[in-house]
Amino acid sequence: LYKHMLQPSDNLFAEQILLMASGIDNDTLSTSATIERMKEEVFKDWTDEAVWVDGSGLSRYNMFTPRMMIKLLNTLRTEVGEERLLELLPAGGKSGTIKNWYAGESGPFVFAKTGTLSNNHALSGYIKTDSGKTLIFTFMANHYAHSTSKVKESMEVMLRKIRKAY
Image (cartoon, rainbow, N blue to C red; front, top):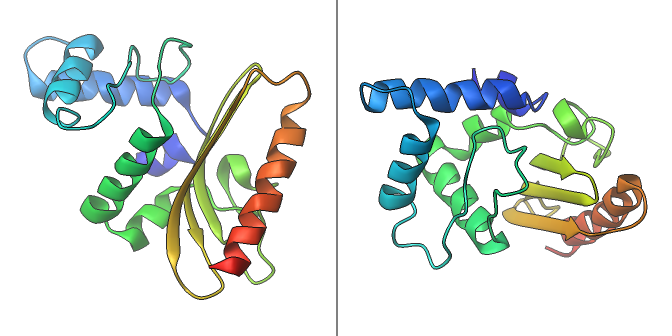
């Protein structure tokens, strides 16, 4: 279920998963109620406040800081386990929304989720370094006036440098 949602980035599926979670959570199908509960319980002690309005990620009103994304990715790695989590995420040069980007010479080294709306692109996930470490990263680019490919090219240059340096 999660692999299907994460790799092709199926936004409708993501919204439906949140709706199903609300049905388990209480007797009303309400994504907004589940979002509020998550904000009160999961994000309550976080430094930044989540501005979260839908499950699809397609709303320009959803706003998460880079610090929040890093904390979320760290929490997921702890709760899901790194091996399982990397299987679920798109893999650079191999699968999902990053299959045409971030390819490694001997296999994927970037495992990440994209988020793109016009003139806004984000990439958040994990990078396997040449020394064997797994690092968490997030890039958020907004209000750019050129193609998203230019942003992705810049991100790829930086990720390759990080891979070698760490």
